[in-house]
Length: 482
Image 1 (tube, rainbow, N blue to C red):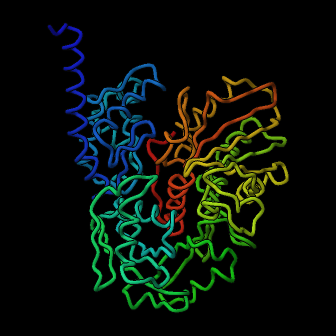
Image 2: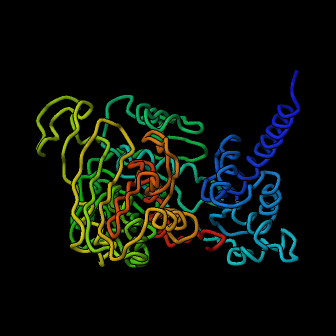
Image 3: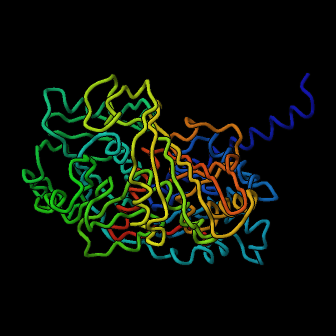
């Protein structure tokens, strides 16, 4: 016989599931039609399952004194769907919590409250045309960028993936490329439908019509012949890293700007979004999105330096193996990297610690770094051993970083976990540049050791997309303001 407690729980669960299922189409329409990315305390709800939406609401209790129930947040999502809004990231969890529990109502209806809190984007729908995007190269980062851009496809999209450029292949190449986009051993199946048009060399994915251009070099391509103009070319091949090499793209007809998904040499600006994107000027033609590791550590280092000050430190990267390494022992021009990647931990080098200074000049010369490649295919960790300019405690440092992850300009870059059970595979698909593992933090006076996880593929790709938007002159604010 079912007990009263069992019935109560089952009724409560069914209610939550119903609200979550009712939220899904509204969240989807907000994203595709208005460019509104809905989240709950930083946890994205776009394309989330009903269970993920429930879990996102449950996470509010980790940060606040009261729960946030789905029936409490649902009216806010409904109200958003009826408003004229410009593209933005809106944390409906924070908005609802402040209204319900922190005096935000103040006599306002939900609609009046939202108009007040979202005044910067109300009745200000941006009619600027979408920016044409070309992915030059279609490896690990290229395919994840394609997924992210396709995910954004729709009437409100400001980045329009028009083409992919790859080297000439053999018969069946297009089907192979589409298959690699459709299935991924690390990141799982593509969320949607993919078909190919071999006659026109086109991949069609969730409404995106993507021309596949075969070329050996940028000089062979006239993008305007494909109807592509003033394009942003994202070079993810790793072939060029200096102005001379990357400048070849600018010689192609139809190209306006170039973004490199790797550290750049020379005077090219290395951008870590959230830290120094204000360095990007309208006249800049070539920009670098730095490396995955630089993106993971720089936001956390900035937060720490701003509050505690950093005297010096060492960053050790425990990094998943990459396609640059060998599956079995074979020749490699770099030391040790010729040894089998799936079988060995391999000591390597990283320029990420020094590269931090390009985004944070105040840390120039203060950090050293090294790397260990380990037999996992994705998700890495940076261990930061730092000497601070003031003493603190584990609790104070963790509380500060937790607040940074929730209520700061860096909230889209820095995530925070208090789990005692989290392991690397739990972070596959993380959209943050880095995730602070608070349970591993060590503090002894003015010395601190921090452990920062990062999805070196997907999290980095999300940072690249943010730089792309900035280069295209597209601002997507995060609301409510901290």
